Length: 314
Image (cartoon, rainbow, N blue to C red; front, side, top):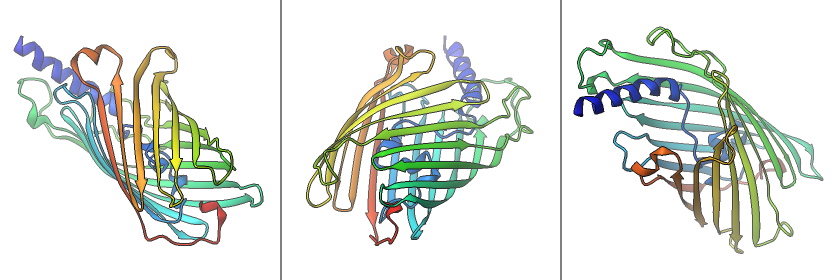
């Protein structure tokens, strides 16, 4: 029985090579007041240096389940431009990837009177992906040399905003993967595409209460798989620009809309320049009997407030 368990772990590890594909796990990080993590075109929107630290523990209760830590920061460098950086460390069984994204965005005014803006973004990605063969404890598995590779890649994105409506498109990992150190059957196409859209419902600009439904769609070119997040956030503001929010996220494969992958609540607050958010996602597939769900905590700071002459950065 013990041998079968070890073989299963190896199988899952090898399968991870196909499932991770040098892609950063996306759960609800972008909903924690940080859409920059999914689209570089958001870099520099706002009048602060925005810093968000995130810890994600997936499938709590399952041994060697995915675990990730990340740090995102972006800021404006001119009236119409911004930069950002995203660093991450992602471990999944006996595979590990870590690296960073370095982003630039430029924001254009289409119509100042009607708050209509277009933002263009690009990211340079540096990623190291490694198979930790030193942790294998079953002999003769056909993997004896170091299995690690460093990849360089790019993302491009566009963001359109019209008053309280927003829509972004992001194309990630435009270049194919280096296959020299991996199995010949390993997919070489890393490209995936993300669509993120939503609308903020409020009585007026000074309203204390807001409702923000949104949707996030991700499509992988290599095998055609895709998923959708349906989200809703409720936000309460006060006169000091502090706010509290709560929401719900529902994720499903696009060919199985009524069979969610994850579903769960989230909540957070911003007090002065400090930000905190927590989200919980219940896994609704066969792993439900073996884990207590996925937990994510976000800590943030908004510092060095500045003033921009461009309304496109708000």
